[in-house]
Image: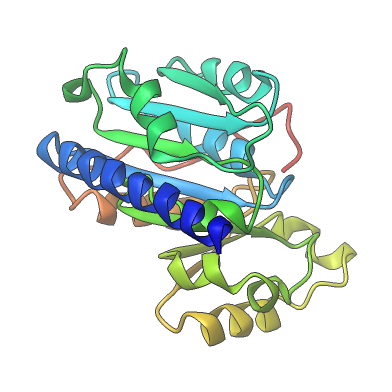
Length: 234
């Protein structure tokens, strides 16, 4: 019972911070998106492929979380936009307090889009609200199509499922229609995109989804080209 009370206290405190973050994002007209997936599903590469076609004047920023290393932040920094690595030191998720602390050096009026790349984990991050407008879950075709049924919480809460590395479909035993059906069984309203950062498949649809989320204020960037991350495979 003590463990349950402690967990509830932590989540209640996180919810208080998340509500404050959401208010601040809304006041500054910031679109905040929280990317969640298992390790290796392609979150960082999708961000690289997305940032590669943003105009330099776009007000975009990235927070990226990992248990150790600043490798992802170094990769993302190549595209010229503000980025901070949140090293959790063993914690399997980001929480509101981490986001609040990481944002302190950045004037929020200088941000239009905030991408949060969560720690690679399909379980813990789903419990923590970060003030985001939407959670986005990634599932690569190198994983099992039953993941939405095994880890239903994040698929239930996500607004969008991005099926990644679809260029590998001819080579892996992944039933993409079953994966979609499983996701919709958990969340009938979930939107689904099929994406390959290697070939560019689905990247225009992903850009259009971002534009719609921004309220069609203006296009995010020119059409996303294929193969924009030349030194990465997926």
